[in-house]
Length: 487
Image (cartoon, rainbow, N blue to C red; front, side, top):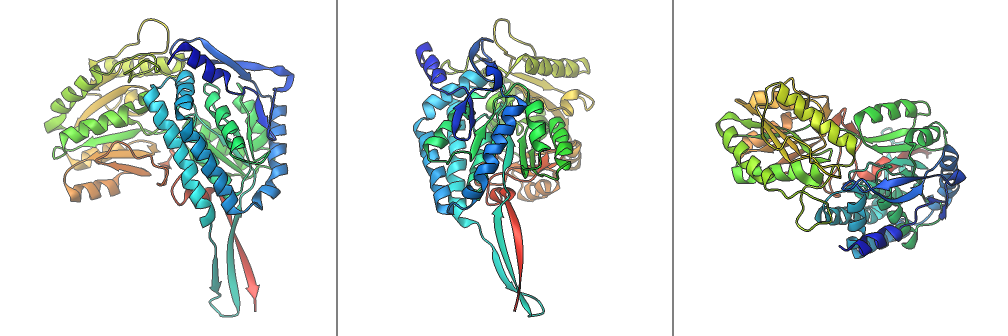
């Protein structure tokens, strides 16, 4: 893409707050910069919301709730359907915008736009399938009438790593259920959400249903809204540490919560696995989004008889990955999101090497501008290395050998997290046995990608609460009401 095209897609985005269906500046006209992670240079400035702006956004959502809840389900679904079509139509421009602010290669950004759009298409269809029930009381003297209603105004907080898909995964079911929203995108990647808000308005979403706050002070703006008492739900995607703090805040008003938190995904490869498929799956599970994904394979456990061959082949594949700015043709490894991310990855690798792990490729930062870190493979990673317990969020693959099935399962489950696990084996009995024993909300069985709008996404243990997507995704935004009928 030319620099003119880059400047054009950035210029086309409204950079103010979206409150009550209108674009408005932040109180006092404050702004903050959005940086290109591949250069460190500012792309633009966007409005920097204050706590007062946050209250204004919640006011708008509360004011719109009653009317929006009464809009026919089919009409709500049609709005989502139109938004889906607009996203697909503008996928190239939206992908370029995403690459500029987040860093991932253009091909991956376009894939995310398509993925994001699918949440709107899925929940457009779910809007008309909100059901209830009617039953005879066991003693025969009455009737049970069960209905579902929107939970009410929602607070949504999305991360920087999938700046559009994590928005549509929350907005889609909220719109379908009849909830109004205040959404706060990550400060590193606000442009994709601002573009999405404009698309939803164009698709016919009424004023006040969606309100967008961009801010450099997430806690200062969102905590008062959580404690306000008028919002009835918080949906958050981000780190487990932040999630714990938000849960504490939500307890004050007993807000309903959905939490998609950190991961520490194990990737198990047994000796009977199709090694070609396992390598392909490993590359997908590790290098999707430059490794900056909660579903990324974080720990590779490979049975001892094939660990050398697996390590050699994975190293060859990782060494061959082109690195550069995400807008450059053929690039697979883009920059990490910021300097802090590079420092964390570098620290984790240094810690493992210092404890005896062998670096087979990569293992260092890249000179020059931008937040680049080499695609890295380590082997013989000891159990006490930080890589074994901390989420990496970067292009680093640590490999540890195992001997028995029990040893592999025990190692995989030895974590406070439980989002996703990957298993490669050609033995059907082992596949089912291990999948059932792994402590995770999702299992990738002989495949390195689990995310799908039509499937329930979420984890157990400290990886979160609730599910997003699938037929259960809309339930997170609905309350079940029981009406006792006397005869």
